[in-house]
Image 1 (cartoon, rainbow, N blue to C red):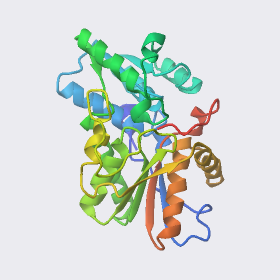
Image 2 (image 1 turned 90 degrees about the vertical axis):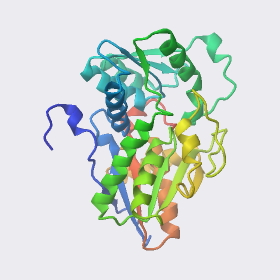
Image 3 (image 1 turned 45 degrees about the horizontal axis):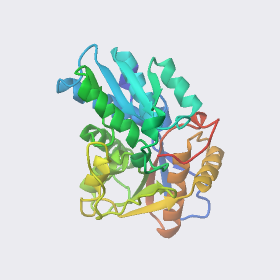
Image 4 (image 1 turned 60 degrees about the vertical axis):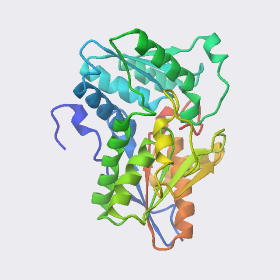
Length: 317
């Protein structure tokens, strides 16, 4: 691949067959190592798409500040793209220590400012969970406030931005092209919902019979149920709320415990995949699906790399 800038290398990650972990299973499992994106995660795809979309619509202009609440990967991706495009980037972490030290340092290296919320704001938080759509809510409230008060601030709104889903439709198209259209099942963890929704739309447009399974941390307070209403507001998970309304888009959502996700992450290294914890959760569910559907072609994503979890290993979406 040749690009004018490193931004041109975002996406087009390979689709790789898993061999050792599938011994004895009569199904095929393929993964896309998204940590091969330049800033190290699948979130590069949505960062470049959301920023380009905002620029095109006149919401983001030279000299502006980009805002987001993030537990890490989207913050890193926005810091990376924002740095190259000359924007100031401010990332809010919901609680002190919620962003791992590794991720915080990466964002800082790209020039981003990582802020913690004031204790009085955290005290107002009623819902505490490791599910991305819930844990970052106070930070999103701060981003909304700053955007309303400053005309030169743009909040990326990863949880409700249609450009997020659009970016992941491209991921789905890549999977179709790389598999020759032979995908029976797709699995992905649900953070913003963008990966699951976008890839599902692309796959089911080609073949409505594709089975799509979402994965959530077992500690989530709100289980996402296809067809059941999900809270939607300026700071809630708008993509998830829309996703669950679409008939037959998501077939099932399963819960995975923290330790079992971590354990599978370690097992992935036997295949040479140095992936993060949500990747372990994805592969764990993919292997369960493989055991149930003989002959199926199953695809999932390895969202980020394990070097972001040296300090702490937790299943955080």
